[in-house]
Length: 446
Image 1: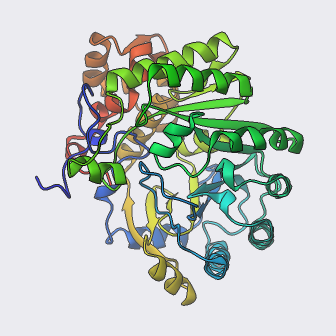
Image 2 (image 1 turned 135 degrees about the vertical axis):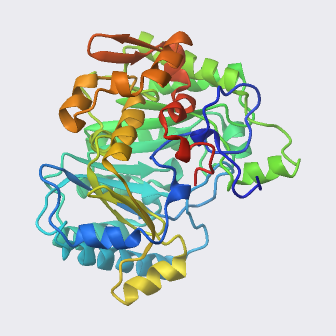
């Protein structure tokens, strides 16, 4: 199997042990993106031209692909070399894409349940650019009645006027990409910000009155030690954010670190999987002692009733209209991705064409599997939900993987509840391929 198509852990039933190798681990969709194709684009065009499925909510993802620097572990489509005119050109394209979607039968007149500004770095653009973009998008499809408007930020891109502008466009959940509070670790991993910028912006965020403030941490970055991790966790607790999300460091194929590792040039590797799980567990234990509650395999929340609308809707099969270069969407059972090429994306919209590049039309069975694996990341699922929605007995249908994982001590089954154990929760992404159909296992993830 060549390097280009080598299987990822995200599609291979395996117990991750030892050093962190090259390949995607985090599972965000099913089937894997590598199975998406150009032939199924016809299916996507068909479903957006037809009435939507009844009672299915609609969300919108807006990709802002600009960054001050490209992190050495980043695998997203981002640009660090675009000037103000190019940012303006891109904003015009987002607006035109939104207009084209608004004309489609599957979209026209539907309210937005959630909006998610992702990146890249949405907070990279200026106050004027942000306010102009938001106003133009909302003139076509408003989000003032959405249950959630989420927005990702990099601390060093924020000023107090920009924070106020972000709140002013209706953002209800702001996610701050902290990753670490240690300046040396931030530098080693290519982050653009430093710790003093984190502490500088926190008072602005509180004053702006966001209903929810989340901070992201990454366990196992290059240079991390037990001492630095303990300090980062304590500082995260001291920040007193509404939510804290902890990811485990991975090295998908297209990162700078992965290239260095493949070429034998990575001087200090990320922590091994056992250590990352220990650090992840430590963070959750300390957050629990500080009064936080588990919300998923990655997130702790101060208010146990907190709902991540974007996450819940996406993991329960909601439709999502995706705007922006390389962005991923989903409509009436068909996955779709926009072109990852800047010029192609802009040129297609200039010709009033949706900038689509590949798609995957799912079967009812594949939609069932998708919801099972994604909702398992919450730490627990109820078979009755799947019986009501799909008419499926998942305990019987997935008896093989459920029995295997139960014998391994990764989950428990009792009455109407399948619950991951502590060990299962810490390695949930590596457990999910057990539930894949055989034809979607042992493949490149992206």
